[in-house]
Amino acid sequence: DAKTTQPTSMDCAEGRAANLPCNHSTISGNEYVYWYRQIHSQGPQYIIHGLKNNETNEMASLIITEDRKSSTLILPHATLRDTAVYYCIVRVNHGSSNTGKLIFGQGTTLQVKP
Amino acid sequence: DTEVTQTPKHLVMGMTNKKSLKCEQHMGHRAMYWYKQKAKKPPELMFVYSYEKLSINESVPSRFSPECPNSSLLNLHLHALQPEDSALYLCASSQEGFKGRTEAFFGQGTRLTVV
Image 1 (tube, rainbow over the protein chains, first blue to last red):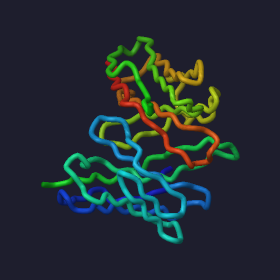
Image 2: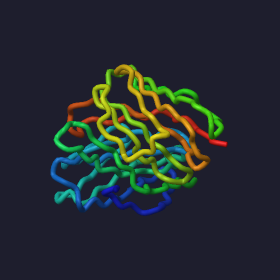
Image 3: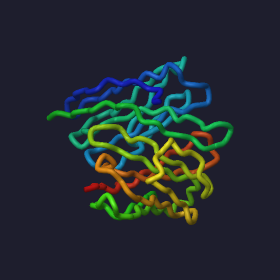
Image 4: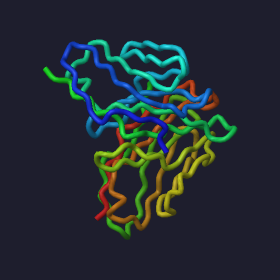
């Protein structure tokens, strides 16, 4: 089962920052938070991931709370092409091996409007 | 090259047919995954291969048979499927051995229709 909860949908004005929240209150100490997005009928696209520190790359920023029970994905200047379903995922380690599972939750549909 | 290539892009098959989906990556990744995605639903994990060995089977029916012939290739053999198996089948790959510190790359999927 997915370990994350997200709002079903959000709107954002073009050019403004999009802040997408995610709750993962049952996350374990060594489990990473990943964000992916999926544009209609395409494969999911990796955005960013983190463990406990805030992270930034050319696409987005990831803010993780100190207790690690929630996080926020920030798209600093949303464009119409950012309209997609955004998935917050906790990567679950499989037993004692290094194999992990990305279990998708329901995601947030972000609609960027002109 | 961060590409995962899936073929075919579209497939229509009858319930008595046998077909295969193919996935290929040349990133040196040693973990490969199959996901199934129904319309308007999130992807669901089916299988995980690690170093060419089946590591995780999420209780998938035996009419789906995965195979990993080498470190770059992943196949999904299909036999006696039902119309409800119609879905987008996604393949992904990632580095192995980093306990979560590495991302998975997804292919564009095979859209399967069972008639």
